[in-house]
Each structure stands twice: as structure tokens, then as C-alpha cells.
Length: 260
Image 1 (cartoon, rainbow, N blue to C red):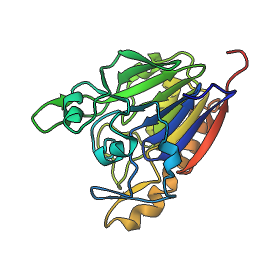
Image 2 (cartoon, helix red, strand yellow; image 1 turned 30 degrees about the vertical axis):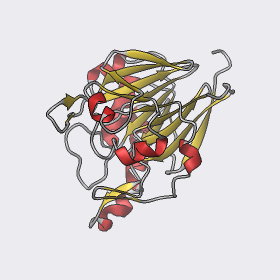
Image 3 (cartoon, helix red, strand yellow; image 1 turned 180 degrees about the vertical axis):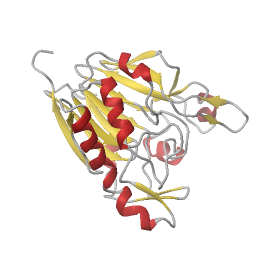
């Protein structure tokens, strides 16, 4: 862990993979660090290895392939601290990982000076080989400032009660194909989520990185339109929330309020 500074930082690596640097703690979410995953191709700048060095913990929201990638986790080392949905530990143990904490909605843990709370996600879970099932989680990360990483989710009414003083919401605004199944948010639904969450800052994620083989015709929309539409909707519905669109690979420094 690094000493805290006057800034927290978010780097949008792409899709649901973000580097959160909060109060000197480096957290990686849903690492997807390869150019190809199953039938999905990554577009955008090459991921610098420095972005995933010296990681203090990894937060896994759920075990769908675009959020849970064993080869990417191996790049982080078998000793990496993994925070995962309940039911996933045995699967990871068999693949050589041992520093694993399972969580359910409402559970909390400490990582450095941060409190990590697992939250509900309105998304369907995974069934692992052998028949064990896992739920889907979001995470509240609280230090000097509060951050919400929802993983994959649709809007749910309890969002209004997640955090009274949320600083940053990282909201998925699309997926990787031309259609969204249940348990996802499009730009309009993500803006509706803001009316419940009421953060100071919103950053659209889950766009601009992956597209399926054979769907290059859809790439221009996927890579540009969802965050812009979200920004328009958010400005209309909750104009007091600052929206920052981060291109894959770019970062945002967030000053720590002086009264904290």
C-alpha cells in the first residue's frame, strides 16, 4: 500500500476492469487483461503491466466470462487477494489461488484503511462446473471518499439506501453486443440509477472495449455512443451530478474534500 495523497484516482482499463487508487490502496475490479476472451476481441490501447502491479486486492462481481477470467487473474499472481461472491472459493482453490474471501450482500471486510461492503446486484448468477452456484455482487468501497462499483446490474429500488454520502458511482451503460439481456443497464436506465444513488460524480463503464467476432459493423456505435447518451440523460435527470467520460486507458484524479 502507498501512503494516502490529496487525490484518489480511477483508471478505466476497459469493460468492467478499473484500477481504483483510494487512500493509498490499489484495487482492481473484474480484471480482463487479455486481447481475446472467448469470442470477444478487445479494442483500445494495450494494457500496461504497471496498471496491475502491486495490487492490494481484486474485487470480482460475478463469474460470467467477461468479468471473471482465470488467465487474467494468473497475471496478478496466485497470492493475489481475491474478494469473490460466496460459492466461488472452491473453484479458485483448484486453480491454485488461496488468498480468497467469499462475500454475500451486506458482508464487509477491511483492506488497508478501506471498508469494502458487498451489495446486491440485479443480475443472474453463474453455475460452476460441479453444480455450485454463485450470486452477483456490487461493492461499496469506503475510505476518505465513497465509491460504488455495481458489477453488472439493472436498477433496483434499494440503490436509494446504499450510501447517503456517495462520492463516485461507476455505472455500466451497455455491454459487448448489439442487444442487452436482463440484468443490465442501458444509458437511460443508468441515468435512472443516478436519481437513486445521488453521487457527486458518475463515470460510465462497460462500454468501448469488447465486441464479438463478426460484429465489426456494430463497433462504431458500441465504442462511442453509450457514454454520450448516458451523459445526455444524466444531465437531464440529475443535472447536479458531474459526469466524466473516461476513454479506455485514461484516468481521473478526484480531489479529497478538505473537510473529510
